[in-house]
Structure formats: structure tokens, C-alpha cells
Length: 257
Image (cartoon, rainbow, N blue to C red):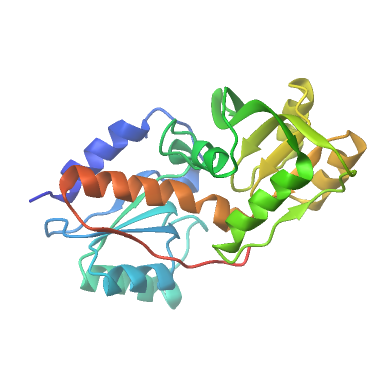
């Protein structure tokens, strides 16, 4: 019977958890342990009441997430935060979280999997964070409008909405870059310019990135923060389920973003 510390140690090594820098609130790795052997795995994008209730509903006692228990920073254990913790403890559910290590993984990562979903083949890296590349890039020859339609078809399955900066009719994507989640920033736009990328695919970004992109001839496809980060946790849960012979399920809890 697989215990949580064995599974967490394997996952840390698989993802390179200790080597990849991240935001302090990410606190990657095992965030909450449990007592019993792992009998079921649930994957979700965020630690939320809906995700925890969904894990309990499918009989999972391990919840794998992208945004962990402390994503919003320090807070008092009262109200919703207390109730979430109480449910986890009452049902002996462990929590394992992986943010940037999962984003950048070469086979289970959000970026490489989203590229596959959109019919793109990654051949390079993108989105430098403290010397580690989180995203991917590549070359193609596809109408940008067709790429937008692929993104919309993907996002619809997760109640997502795709937005795109103005593009001209007949415009083609020849060189693209991708960074899931909050991937559009002044830094990634500058990096795209240095790499001569013409199309950037992200989850979301601040308003000013759309202005910067249009004036620099860059198209940005904002495919939804939530939707673009569903792939990694699902793939990781399925991988662990197959390795340890444990049922794995995805808990859908769209945020609307």
C-alpha cells in the first residue's frame, strides 16, 4: 500500500521540485500529509471548497493541485479557510501542489500539453524565470485565425473564454511562444520580441499587454488561466495512478477566468 511520503518523494524527483525556483506562496511539494495509504487521487487546478468536496466525492485521499493551500498568502484559519482544512482532515485527504515545476515539465507540463492540444510542435523554450524556462516555443505555418479557433474549441470544454488581440485577415503564425496561466507580461513580450515571435499563447495577462502587443505586431491569444492549467494536474494524476495502481480523477471547478 502506497503511503503519501513515498508518492511525494517520487513526484518531487519527477518534477525537479527542489531545483525549480517559484513564488514563495507556491510552496511546492507535499503541503498536507495524511495517515492512511493512498486509495485514490483527485486532480484540480486550485485548492477550493469545490475541489476538496469533489475529491471526497470520488473517494480520493490525495488531492493534486497547481495552486496550493497558501496561494493567497498568509490568512487566519477561520471561515472558508478553516472549513477547507477541516474537511481535508476529517476525510484524511493529503494535498500535493506543483506550480512552475509542473508548468515546465517536458512531458507532463501544462505548456507542452497545451501545444499538443493546439496542433503545435515545441522545438524550443520560452518564458525565462530566474534562469529556468517555464514555457515552450516553436515554428509553424498556420493561419492565426485557425489557431484561435483551436484554442476556443479547447477552452470551451472548461467553460473558458478565449480573447485575442486584433489580427488582420490572412495573418499567419510562423513563430510562436507559449506560457500558460498568467503568461503575458512586459517581460514575456520583450522576450517574444527578441525571439522574433509573432504569436504568443497564454492563459491571461494585464490589459497593457494587449496594447503593447498590437503596437509591436504581436498577436496574443489569451486562452484562459484556468483552462490552460488543467492539463498538467490531470496528466500528473494519471501518471501516478498508473504507476501505483490507484484510481485517478479530475475535479472540474472552473473559475471563469
